[in-house]
Image 1 (cartoon, rainbow, N blue to C red):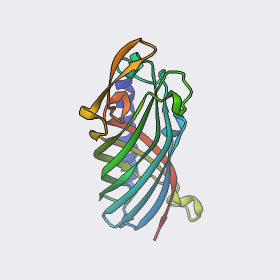
Image 2 (image 1 turned 45 degrees about the horizontal axis):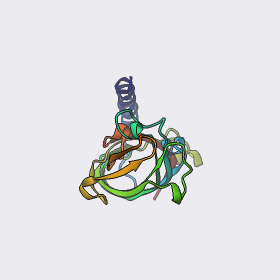
Image 3 (image 1 turned 60 degrees about the vertical axis):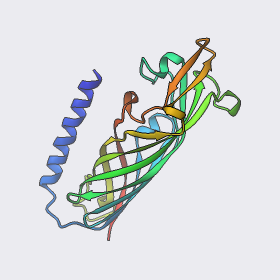
Length: 217
């Protein structure tokens, strides 16, 4: 079911981008934009991203706050079997990339992610913290800056919808050998936790879409 859903999302992404490309024959515009991630709202936090587009150059800074992965959300076979809840107090980083045209760009992105692990259902306070660590990822992001009202001659023209697909593999972590042993009260055993990937299903891959506003200059 998950693979089917991803395939459908990818197909829709390609169709929308194709339609947008056919209607975009303008020279490259310098733009500044501010967008907010939608999927982050679903998991209890938020993400803000600022972009600067100068001809072919794309520059980015993004910062996410208070993201929560409850045990019900985690995939089987990983931290779900250890009855963990995972909290990310912050995730932050920079990107630089290439603009193919006014709406499509590819970026190299470096990001840092802070993970905090709690027993499932426990209050997320310092005394309940099982362990914490940071990871560093370095990967790629493909972004489509779609403006449904770009032909309007009013404030609506700057509204943006930004679907994106990202591949952010983990390069390193603050854990020795990218893993740590800890005692799990729920299983009653010494467990091994491996530093997580940041994407869906504990992989480097994920997709999202953001909404925001851009100004051409």
